[in-house]
Image 1 (cartoon, one colour):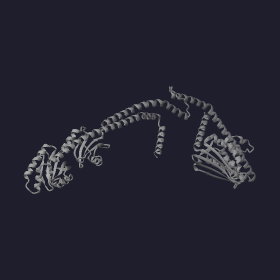
Image 2: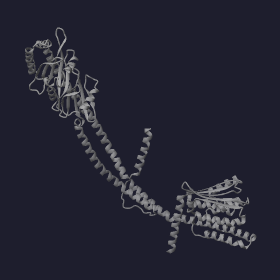
Image 3: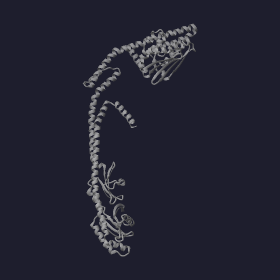
Image 4: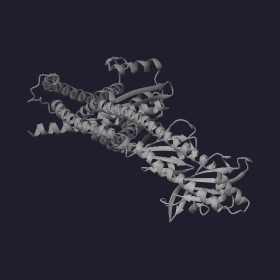
Length: 623
């Protein structure tokens, strides 16, 4: 299917290429030769450079986030160890035991608080430590230099029940939990390590340990590793961005994270705007994410693209100038030849001057000038002679018709005088005068309507000889065809031939004359229902008409109507050449049909030539 669609497009392009001027063709070919290599080189360079930069960036980023993951995992292990050390404190179990027994545990809490404070001071990554039961807070120590601690968020933003549910998932192991806190219409992130406190001897649950982590440790990790200012990096846990550096599209990142299946290596996602790398942290089910805009990454490629555009523009200017110079050099002689051919079409046969060229175009111009000189000679010596001979032939052919025509009419008048008396002779004389009026006109062409009137008058005279009921005429002509001009006395010899060769042997009959326009042609039909023509005789007539032979005139069967038939064919060939056709069909005892077809353009062209010749003769006579 695609091939069928491509072929018409290709043909239309070729057709359009053939219609445009030569200077545009020069430009088109030059542009194709220059710009296609530049574009191909530019595209390939851009593609290869982009791939190299992309691979280099992905490799560099993979190293960065893997290093970041190692450091974060080290911190996770270190903080998990701190929670384990806390569980070794005897004061912790004393507080829990006395709390369960509803015994005063103030001294144990004070001792436990001192130990928690030492841990916080010794580890800046620890922001707050707290011990809880399912129902209440037992001991909480916060870093006083920080804005918030466990005392402020439990249970106001995170309930004791929620803390217990989180810790219970670990079955005594540390569980990392990320919460989004709201304070003063602002949102802050809290990272907690929770684990259940079980009695060392009975292993039964007694309380919950919660450690709040300082999120600044992630920011420090990123600041040491990421050098590219446009690159964004973030740690994401539980769908919450814990630490972020740079501008990052959070919704898209979360969408990409939901699609990650590989929990070991770096996963890269590429879009039209950003390149995103995601690396999971299996220990806490977090992710490290990096993002960089494509336009920043390919900033150097844009410079290459700009240089390619500048190169294309310079090539366009230089190529256009060179193509215009070259096309003008070729077009000047070509335009001279074109203008000379236009003058020749108008009848002005002049040579091309003032073009001193020795190349192929110069040879073409020299040959053209030689041709024009020969044409002038042919027109003056041969062509005018042929025109004169053609005119003489036409006049001779028409004069052959007139004596024969008058002979038949006078014979009809003779019969009328003998049979009917003097009273009807006036009618015949009127019809005869109409015929003579048309016959004596100097015009070479009459409208088809005038020719039909002439035939009608002619038939009205012949009816005297045949009888009113024995000779019928039917006419069917298109309205548009009536105004077309045809050679004078073109149809009358055909009608006469039908009457005297087809109907007279039979004694009665019908003549049909039709004129129609179809397929840009005028079709004239003359049909009779007479005795017809035998096949062998019809074959001979066709051969003689086709060969334009004079043998037909020398046979024993020679008659005036047969002379008219040959003359009609010769006139058609002389006036219209191949633009006219003549055919004859006949069946014995069923009649004969003669058909003439002439191109409409040939009809109008012959009339115009006749008018020009007539006006030329008038001017010569005036001189």
